[in-house]
Length: 260
Ligand code: GLN
View 1 (tube, rainbow, N blue to C red):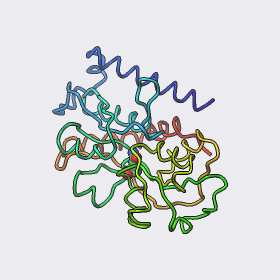
View 2: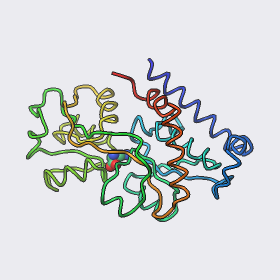
View 3: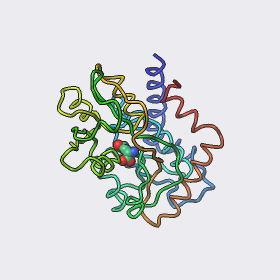
View 4: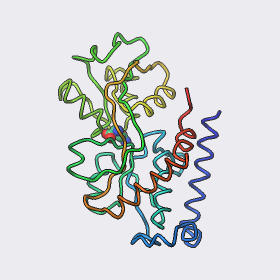
């Protein structure tokens, strides 16, 4: 019940934003006109993959979630209008590199390899990779995964790390995390490795599945920009710092993630 209300609330908030963007004037009024960023009055495009609840997901025709709320604050910081571009997860970095998007916000983990391709903001969340199995599975820990078939979302850290640990031929890649979870339900894979918060949502939405206790890895989420785009990175870090110090970030997170 609380969750449904939270989704309805966030959808209303997002609709409010798009209404402002469409009419032009209110978005400009909300913006800090003294910021004089070169983005002021322009469109700021966020690349994401809206298959990753509660960070970004579809709610009817809207894309909502924690990252969308953070992106709204960033756009406001830069005096810009926000546009959300929903693309495949592994297309986000190329989109940022080729200026098809200004930044990527997608529960994206900072990795050394990605750091060679894009610049990352300060981190805004710590996450873990979790293992989902069938309720009656014999797999009780990460150690039991050896030799098993693991489902992942293509290009994610779940994919990268499990391919490294268990071997290319043991990992099956799916375009969406939900597809990997579906494959687990129907017995096509033995386990799914995916970020903890989406994992909880998927387990809740699908009967007969459970999360293993413990973490496969611990990671930090951050927003990525094109290498060298200091102005945008500074704006993002300023917005993140404001969200952290004002308590707004916690408030956003608590709207989307129920305390246990
Ligand atoms: N945190 C994971 C990664 O960065 C998954 C992100 C996602 O699927 N949106 O690879």
